[in-house]
Length: 438
Length: 152
Image 1 (cartoon, one colour):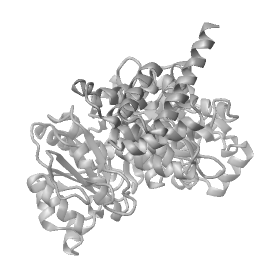
Image 2: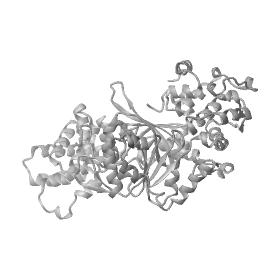
Image 3: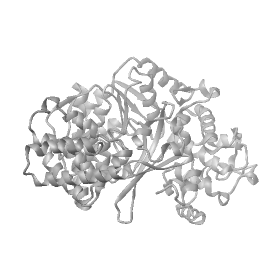
Image 4: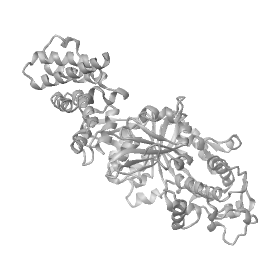
C-alpha cells in the first residue's frame, strides 16, 4: 500500500493510528492519528525502519509483523509500548496484519494502534473514586483496593476470580503497577487465545527444529518476563500437561525451551485469572489442585456488577469522559430515566457490557448533550417511552465516519458492531456497502 | 514470506535465522540481488566463506554495480561491524586466503579500494584461483570507470 492509496482519506479519518511498512520493514504510510501518537511527521518517518522509530520492547524479540508471518494469524489487541519523538514511552494496544500481492506473497505489513494512556488517565473529578484505573466506591471494590495496597511489597502469586467483564485485567494491572516490579517487564498471556499445541512454545520458547514450524529459535513469555510479572488470563483453559510445567516454574523457577535440554531459570511473579468456577474444574480433574494451591496464595474475588450497583454511576461518569475524548463529543451526563433502567438491569456482561452500552449511546446521541433513554439499546428499553425521542438520531442517520470509527474500534468485527448498535449483522453489512467502505 | 522474515532477522542481527530464511527466499527468486547481498553477509558472518565467496562471484559476474552501489548506502550496514569482528591485526602478515577473501568481500560494500587490497592479498597466496582473478578484474575495471567518470 503506497502513500498515494485511494484509501488514504479513510485512513486519515480514523482515530486509531495506522502505519504500513514494506518488506524491508520501512515505513510507506502513516496516518494523521499515528503522527499524533508518536509525535513525528510523515516526512520524518517515511522510508525509515520501523524498529528505529518505534523502539518498542517487542521489536527485537516478538515483532508483531513477524509473528503474523510465522503463525499466519493476525494479531489483535496486543499491549505494547512505543517511544515517542521526545523519548516518552507510550502504552498502546495494537493490531497487526500482512499485506500481500496478487500472488499471495507478503509485500509488507500494516499496524494499527491506539494510545491507551489517554484511556488510562482519569480526570481529577473522578480521581477520588479510582485506584490505578479501577473505578468504584462500593465496599467490595474498596476491599480489593486495600488488598492490592497491602500486597504491594510482596512477590507472592495472585489468583483473580471473577465473571467475564468484571475487570480482572485491570486488577492485574494495578497489582503490577503498585508492586516493586513495576518498572520491570509485564507480560500478558491469554491462555484461551493460544492453540494448546502452541502454548508450550509461547510460554517457554523453542529452538529451531523442535517442531515442524519451528524454523528459528524463539524465547518464550516467561523469559521475556524475567525479573518482572506475567499475567496468565483464563488459566483454567491451560491443558493439564502444561499445568505440570507451570507448577515447576512456580516451585523453582526452572524450565526448558522446547527441543532443548538446557535448563533455564527465571524470576517471575505470576498473576493468574479465571472466570470459571475453579473448584468445579479441580473436582472434574481439569485443573491440578497442587497448582491451584501454589497460585492461590493471594486470592482476589471480583464481585459482579449486579452486586456493586453503587459503582454504576462512577463507571458511567468515567465512560462518558472516555468516549467524549474518542468521539469528540461533549456529553455531560445521563438522564435519570436512562440511569434508572441501568440500575435495574442485571448486568450479565458486567462492566464490559456497561461500557458497550455507553459507547452505543454515544453513537446514537448525535445532537444531544446527555444520554437519554432512547440512546440505550432496544433490549434495555422495551416498554419504556423516551421524552426526548425526537432528538435521538435513528440508526438510519448513522454517518459513514461514525460507522468506520466503530468498525475500527472493534477490529472490523461486523457481528460485534451489530451487537453494539443493536441491529442485525446484515444491516451493518448493507451500511458498509452503502457507504462504499472498503 | 521467507524474504520478509529474512529481512527482519537480518535487521536484528540474528544471522543464523536470516540465512535460513533468505536461502529459502532465493530458491524462489534466484536473481533477487537484495536477497543475495544480505545472504553474502550472513555467510561471511557465520563463517560459511566458501558459500559467501561463490555467491559473491555469481553476483559480480551478473552485475558488478549491485554491491558497490548497494542497498546499504542508505540503510544500516552491518558489514563494518562484521569486519571488526573478524579482523585480526596479527593475521595481516599471515597467508590465509579465505581470511583475506572475507575482508575483500565485506569491504566492497563500503570501500572499493580496500576491497581490492584484500582480494589482491588473497590472490598473492593463491595465484591459480581463476575465480578470484575474474573478480579482481571485474572490480578493477569498474573502479577505473568510476575514476574516469569522476574526473570528467
